[in-house]
Length: 200
Image (cartoon, rainbow, N blue to C red; front, top):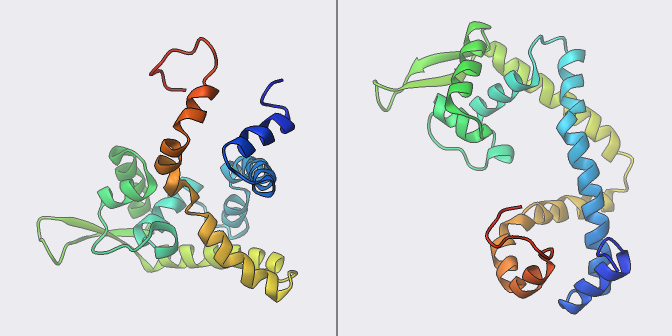
């Protein structure tokens, strides 16, 4: 019976020591995450915000403004001055693309270049007042929409959900340890005839 059959998947997880309730949750969560990923890739809310607010930039350009700001919830603890290399690293894009996007934002008046206070040979990037207004407006727009949705939930559900979501958001941090733990099971899952060492 193929592993696409739910009972077979359940059996596999149970054999690996994963409880029935957890196995069911894993399969449900995976399905929801796939749906969420497809919708997130479309970035419906961000696009709608830029259109409704009549800002006149695209999502890639907006991402650069956010990366210049470097807020902690999105990029962790951001220290020091922001340079083009910082933007490239935060967004996971090529430095040349980051440089082009930053230049566009400077030309449009949303960002500005300045000389580093720490090293006069270094050029840093900062938001202008206009750029700050754009980031703040889009963020407030998103918070209004999400707040409207969460506002329909009982307070105790919201109080339970937020810390659990924060906890769940770190689940991929344990991938290496989990793959070592289940090395035998993972090896057995490899389709027959697959070449050893060839990445999927």
